[in-house]
Image (cartoon, rainbow, N blue to C red; front, side):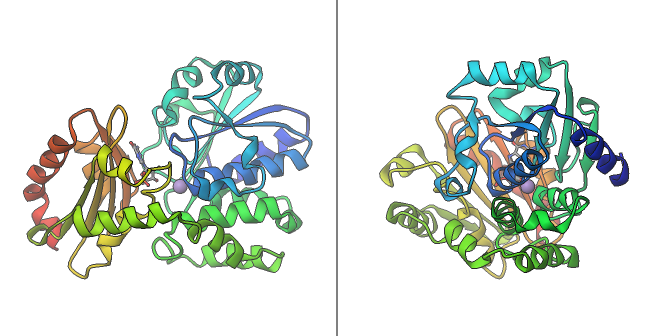
Length: 339
Ligand code: 5GP
Ligand code: MN
């Protein structure tokens, strides 16, 4: 579906009253929460009935966002979420490319009779599941796509703080605070428009990045000093954190956000991997610099995917086995990692 058709569909949609549900991916990040909040505010201003649903809780560094308290959390309130989904005219899926990325919510989404709408920038979307798609892997973030949608209806929407702060949060966090995916002028044009309309960008930056607990900062230090292995031969660094590591620093959701980026600041490192032991699975977080695609690696070996330079995955093995599995495959990627 091309952009003009998608925008027409939205124009048509808001011309009469509907019940809309906006969903985001499991373990939501700034882009998921930000793009959903901005779109929700826009829809509400256009007289739509909107419910926000997240599969699980999101981190404190996002809970300051206006409207974030309105999210229904499926893990905590499945019965009510199911009722809302049953009554929906349209269910939007933001910042994820396939229903399995909605975690515990996926079975309910698959059973729905109403139309699903995708707004996303991840590789290889599950196209057949959606009636309308606004999908583009070139953009920095889903928030940038939501910015485009809202732009069709007038710049005055960006005077609304709920919208502008949410969009800026999405763009800022998905570009690693404007450090990657920033070679398109449209990103800065979007941000400039938000600032022209009154956004306090410094305030948002501080709310997201300067609100660490002492434990969170010490966990970062521990991760780098004591848990990072560097494989110079493969231009790779791996940080593995066990449940004990996390408990020792009183882990809260979001506390490992950003940890995976630090090893990439070493000049010879092309890929950084954070492996964390969760309650019932091992999570992988991959980042790369340059042409090495972590999407392919995550997809081929770790049941995941994402973008060329940022991807995730999971495994049901033990932490040590997960680390070993990754170390074993590094030689196969040696040439690509060193090129
Ligand atoms: P993170 O490492 O921050 O969890 O995720 C990096 C990127 O990969 C994000 O855009 C995220 O949505 C995506 N991602 C994370 N985990 C998975 C996964 O298990 N499968 C897929 N397809 N994408 C993932
Ligand atoms: Mn995103």
